[in-house]
Length: 412
Ligand code: CTP
Image (cartoon, helix red, strand yellow):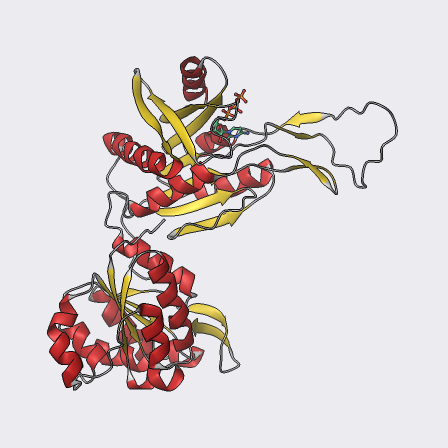
């Protein structure tokens, strides 16, 4: 599902080895519906060919202030007005220095100076260049002027050294961009969503699981990200791709999901339990494969903790949403769970007989205290997720305290 349909990104590529990653970044942005106009510095063209970006973005690359033909088509002032975001990736120490000093000595720096659109940079350089006081001063100046600094990351560098300075990965930068452009009502909020089934091992080759595909939880995580939230998706095993703008934590068992959920919930504003968590696990996991011997075999099971109950215990103030999968007495059972688990909202659906699980469509009845109810008509899970996310925001805002003071705009 495109998460940035028609959003315009002016991608500035400057001269570092990470320029090759900017090609993948271009593709990743286009993949989720964005329009990308690439502007290359002279240095960048020594690392990657213009034709690569041209082919990936479907637009002629701009690289000079003095290209009469390109200027005739769209002048640099017009170009500066065009984007929703100017993203410079990779941003070398040199371009950072020139931006910090307000230089306009090539097309890219001129565009930044001539534009009032948000600017984000993904620094990429040798660790010593990054650590130098002058670079840090320049970055601090840009941060103080509202430039979003994405990264850098740490690890192996092309120069053979190890340390801080490498460009964030294209998918991470794409997630940052989705968040930056999502000026929605959940901006500055952290939402945690559990999704998918859990797997409870019986022996080294067998486990107990259920038919959950994770589709509803993933769609909800994506919908909340599109409303501006930072989203952590705690996911059991699924075949689904991580939605743009979402950070996924992979788990297998209910106990692992509970630990990961508690950790993520520590600074969350909203928690949604969409996972189909196994209520029981094997009391003992056999160390060796269980051999077939007798005609009958019983499995001793023990209760798993209820994740929603544990999270509520740790965070009495958190806005919490649960699901209820029922085969009978939908409203009665859902309202019992709402009360028992001290939830703010519960989304109930009929299951069994081929309904809801492992399908692309669903239907939800959402209940909250004092008789609150909203029926979300039968639709695709993505559409339903958008409607449920909007209702979550509505109920959350009805009881919310003001947004926490936001951390500085530096993303690590
Ligand atoms: N849930 C949870 N931890 C569990 C079991 C369920 O957090 N160990 C959450 C689910 O993610 C869902 C909600 O509780 O949001 C309700 O799940 P459901 O399976 O409908 O209900 P249960 O509480 O397991 O009750 P029952 O199986 O008796 O219907």
